[in-house]
Image (tube, rainbow over all chains, first blue to last red; front, side, top):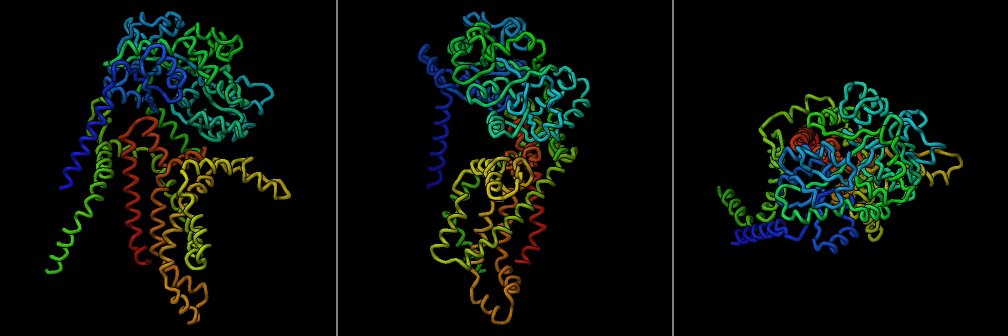
Length: 353
Length: 287
């Protein structure tokens, strides 16, 4: 009988490989993050491994929901997880992450007070997330299309740019962008009809919906677009790293700001290694190298930002107190809101077909 | 009675030969698909750790919002148009391959037809992006040749989606039609001609009816995946690139709502099966 043998063999292989996968060794640090987002830079991993003797094992997610599911379904596998501050509540409520002993992180003292004390990350005096970097979803322009940079978000609606405007294919980002364009608080949108009307009038202007940094940069490189929503770190990367004619504009109406933080999942096997890794991630030395070699968002560590050259984009533009006044940080969003935003966004996309 | 016994014996001896294929189908297709059917009736994904229950809500969502129906119709139209273009381009090519070319030249052309299969689909789509955009290869080449200035920017439009999909799927039509056209005995065509039929009449009365099975098989092979396609519309379609397939992809990738994504997929499957069932008697008669 061949078949039972085969089945036994397959089962044995499956058991064996899963045992291997879950046998996280004590000196390994399992990190869950977006791909290509700092923590998996080969030079950084190498420097950290050399300094601490811990081995870094990277795993990635494609959406916040996937990230939450991965921690839920693999308890004890991950030691460090990168969570957008707006999702920290949800992870804590689900008992997925544990309080962090920040006295073990020497660099924590240098994190700016407003970020470290953010009510999204600190619950009952306990720290559930260590602020890492923050950035903006603002506008970016193709320098070739403008004599001088625009100052208002209304530029996106200017008929002169018809068919040369882009916006990211993301419901939450689109709705919050509409809120800013209609002068509303992104975390407390009172007049949804105004947002819908505003976005509806934007749709005929749109060339395409971008989904990755590469999309955006390609379209600028081939001079197909004038203006669009973009992330501050990506605009910086496009300019310094890829030498593209891209400039970030933080419009007078404001911009959406987000904060990314590191947390330690409940049941992490290597908490000491996780603390060392988080401390390394907020270290000025790592940050300066990340900005210079790759381009990055703004560090939450004030010392790290000060270590950048005077005229660095992340210091000069993003550190400008005038910019700080205009931006609105994303707060947590309920599942019901998220679904409502998606329904609105899909309807807009269908109506413009 | 004797025949039945014989066929049962035949089945028994064929079993060891069939078993690996059926085992593979069970493991690789049937099990994941039934898991998806199961998910489509749930309120939450069991993996998400939240309490879940059975519901018909995911299927009801399709009917409660007009946008899904609008998109489904748009996708079906896309499927029909792409299939039609594949017939228009693929059938003559298959005829030339089967009946006109011989030997080396046939092999060379055949290779050109199959070549797209050997490159990655995403690479093909991105190379179309370079060709179709304003200032791209097509635009530059035409402006270099023509005395007057024209502006070709097909990128991020409905025609771009059609071009990309037709390019991806036309080999299926060529291959299936080639097989049936090649099987047509040349003497039938000669007989038709010698009985006084014009070339057009021979084509209409002899060649097309005899090659109908290939046409039908090719059309089904193209229509079904095109209706659910999401990659080509998303990359090439721009603002007009929202289709039923891209909405399903959003549910799986962007908002992680697998139950709704699964339900939308099965509605698509049902609609496609109904269309094929309605079309099959007509097509069988034609074939």
